[in-house]
Image 1 (cartoon, rainbow, N blue to C red):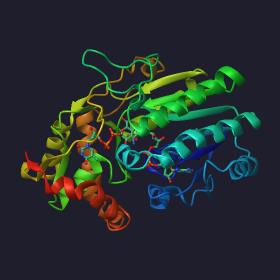
Image 2 (image 1 turned 135 degrees about the vertical axis):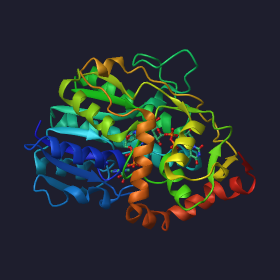
Image 3 (image 1 turned 60 degrees about the vertical axis):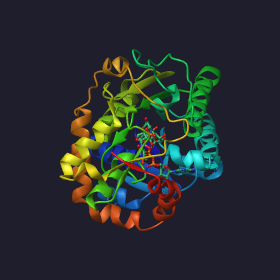
Length: 343
Ligand code: NAD
Ligand code: DAU
């Protein structure tokens, strides 16, 4: 592994991964391939933009010619695919781009990996492919995929296609299925950066429904180190769950967030729930731990550290919140907040 194509590397997790890998491996070259949708942001890559081992190509993973040109031009041997439409609420408003990028785009990359005989194709997937997980169970990698939102269904379809290329063509693939990531550079549509930036400005926090849904909030750096471990030690054809292995209710996350920022609980508003909202995700992470990986942060530490980053990096998020984001926020929250109930 030497020349790695990181698709979606200008997004939240992808950019953290690029920074992590360039710091850890002096002899690796990283080429970011990204369409720069609303979620892609070159500010996320400022730390590495002058590094001679880093290159950037603006391109769509649904465009086979540009993908092939890029693989040829940079002598790519490995693809790590982060590129996706990633927000559940947007997939409910309009699933179209999710099917194109998360399903068809994955197929285009797999086909390119096969044509060029790459060393490895790694797919970044999600715990949402398992669907709602009842109490008493934590998902293992062999569980059925039972996605329930258009986003989750598009990611599960990607996983199935990756597996098909392994079984049918012997393509050397691996998959990681991560829980909720939080940390620097997360677009403030996702709950933790949205609530942190709202709370900083004493704006209301729109909690969906009763706020008792459960998520495993992991620090993005821990997810990146797990992907690194799977890239180097993961067995071809296998999927690996990645998370802390402990989930908490959203309201508990909100309490930690408000305490960290020293903001009052009266900012909490209970608003209309997300349609089809998965109540609980829970991952069994024994398989990735058996490769020698473990997370460095508990969910509570990850939340506090993330919130602190947003408090100290207004330069990064204020310009985002004043652009495209405003129209999205109005569409998603204006009516909900008008009909909200306080905590
Ligand atoms: P993000 O929305 O922050 O970034 C996605 C990136 O992909 C952006 O830079 C965007 O410009 C790019 N992109 C979108 N469509 C593209 C296309 N057609 N061609 C090329 N680039 C395109 O997403 P994220 O939160 O960093 O998630 C990255 C990956 O990790 C996704 O595959 C997501 O499903 C998965 N994942 C995310 C989480 C999480 O909590 N955020 C957890 C588990 C898995
Ligand atoms: O679980 C992994 C997934 O985590 C990733 O695959 C997705 O890409 C990522 O977006 C994330 O999905 P979630 O839907 O879990 O994340 P989100 O931050 O949107 O919501 C987290 C929880 O907070 C969820 O229970 C919904 C709730 N929520 C979210 C928003 C945006 C609210 O209560 N209010 C909100 O305004």
